[in-house]
Image 1 (cartoon, rainbow, N blue to C red):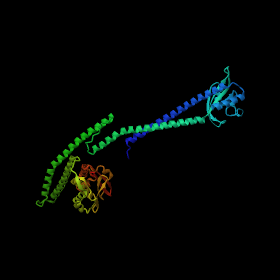
Image 2 (cartoon, rainbow, N blue to C red):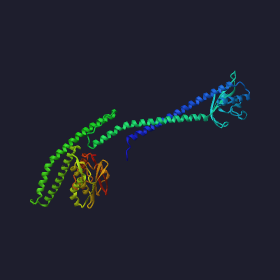
Image 3 (tube, rainbow, N blue to C red):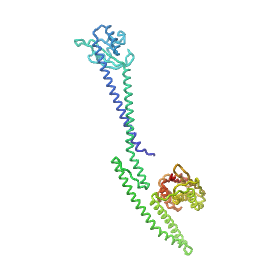
Length: 465
């Protein structure tokens, strides 16, 4: 299962939190502003009703209705005067005689009860949503004479609220975009050092201990960087000790193994009349000493490659001649299994290489391709130019390799099939040597394989351009 990067684990959670926070603030702001708007409007209508009531100096119904219509037109407000029994005495928009009793209207009941009444509802009279504020009108003895009501359509108010909502949403959206951008930068600053340390750790695991992680601004990251740098120094020291140990032991073993092999070959000569069992045991000793000698040779080769650390002499060389030499060296081995070695390489493809080392890498790959294939198969060696790289592939029609082995295939002494490898005389170091040869050329090696179909080993080498 593909793993999600820390960047995409942190960032969406921050975005969600920002979205929730902005939505909460936007809703709260809108409701607060709406309440403030309605309170302001309520006070405004109350003031209009009081001022309108102060203009009334008569109890004549016709005069009251005339005053309502005149004041309502000039103030763009609906004014209504309601008697104590709920009968409409005057209205700025309608004929009072045609209007029903208002004694059940909530705001009228409150006003006739002596307090200011406020209510919002749909008016059947004017066929729209209205906000009503009614106040009691008193005589000099503080007795309630009637209720004076001022009203405005809610459509105008709703339009103002819609504009206010649009502004709140727009501001919240712009702030959200800005906050998301800031969060992206913050998360990137958190994860970027981790990516750098991950790359460094991969270089350390690949054997490159020269890389150093720079100092970090955050103390936690800086401590981790220092720990990794210290670890790389220790690993580098251990690697040098290991390389020296392997080289020294290999050199020390080389002489006695060569002597043993020489003596055994002498004992196997016709000058000695051994019984069959003795001859068989000597043959086994000769075979195993030869295998041990091959392992020592490969270990010495690896040791030399590691000591070069990428500093090998490279000269412009025609690749076709290197491929041809490698094929010639493998031809006898291929003929024993009736394996066809096929080469495709553009003419005059030349670039800086160490020809003997690259030839050795190709020989190792071709020999493996022949070894791990049935007789009468074909091994194709294909070279081509790709951008600023030269790509060389060795493809066989062999047994194939399971995917679980591919990542460890270039490790020392790693074998996919131990019994088969030993039977075929492998040392377990051939592919490791290939990897190191490619590494000293500043290139990479890759492998693709399918069981029963074969494998493709590909070298990617810089063309020096």
